[in-house]
Image (cartoon, rainbow, N blue to C red; front, side, top):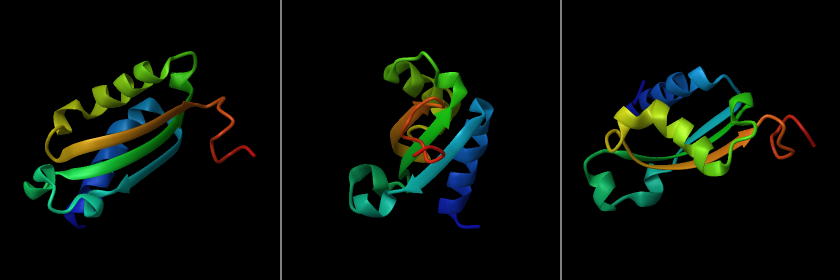
Length: 97
């Protein structure tokens, strides 16, 4: 496994505690080559997660839940994290049209 796949696996394992029905993790580090945070080897990631635990929560509260599970990975090995966290009732997750 490479560092990138190790990091994605680590993020996936941490977020499994939220029991997502969908979880997509994308490494966007290549888009930030030369950026100060990327120089130390820390990565830029995008997480899209759909879970029942987000029901009734405002977006900021959903993001806090995600950050709570990844806190010790910031700022290294995760330098930046973009989050799209949706409740399972959301009409925009892949399982619904």
